[in-house]
Image (cartoon, rainbow, N blue to C red; front, side, top):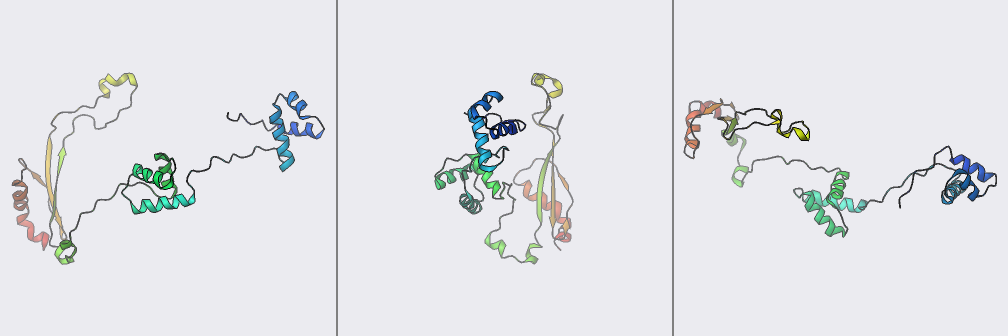
Length: 224
């Protein structure tokens, strides 16, 4: 059974005052309408420490001690791509304790670690790693992007009540095939090329020949 509300601070001195006058604990409890155990605990604390203030709660002991947290940090740094669920499974087997995902998540944050979205970096094979700076300056980087013309409101969320789900002002209007536009651009160590609108459909052949046709007149200015 949990503890009740603490005794009001203004009543604690009255208990001690009557105790110092020689009144029995039972009579004090009856006159102030408290339980005998409550009066006994206040008087005992006064006799031991000389104070009648409420003792600060110590809280529950953490399930993972400092040594466990250091081991968890080493594991997270070694396996940086592991999910919280995978780290929880490892911790349960390693520490032989019942641990939840939330417990491991809080423990990771206490060790000054945090989950971030990993940065993307192009993969370089052994041949590219041996390239010189002058060689990389001859590379022309290109990419294309597709832009769709959105129809209606842009937001995916709407503020409404439960009953307003069929209100037309709460709809997110959409079409099956919205109008789109494909653009293509390039850049090199010498500068950026112009942004070109891609006309027609895109297939394997056009994705190779069309960029060459676009950049050929200015290829020398880009690559030096």
